[in-house]
Image (cartoon, rainbow, N blue to C red; front, side):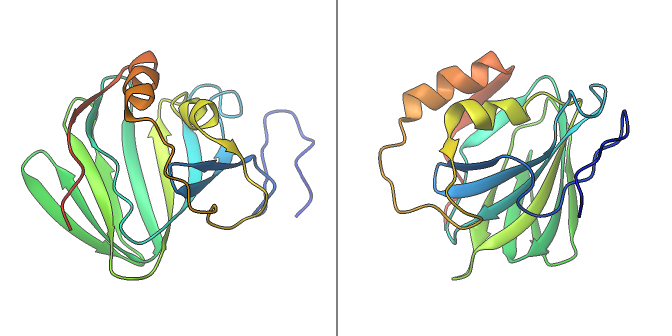
Length: 164
């Protein structure tokens, strides 16, 4: 796919957006708030089995996920949702949520955040990826740094990840 040249239009094939290795996963930024006039940010995520962010609350944006491949559990408030290929999950701002990649295989999903802006947190947290692949094993991710970084984007970590 040829990158877009029309004003206001965005077209990106796999690997055309910035690739970022962060906290054991791969993030490709498909669209930023700058691309969409602030409406949303869109990420394609490749996440290893067992990946689970801490329980958190976004004050600034809603999140929506579309599962392309894999098996996941999402927690939103007190409710747990199981999601596999083809599933859609909406997580509203102001409600504690998290998710976990279940099973032995990685998951691939789209993550839409509205309004946009939170996608830039991943750029700050990660490093440029060498390929569209999961990163080499790295245990140096600093949890305290993540707490401070997400706070900059009006998000609060309030608990641990979902248990296996």
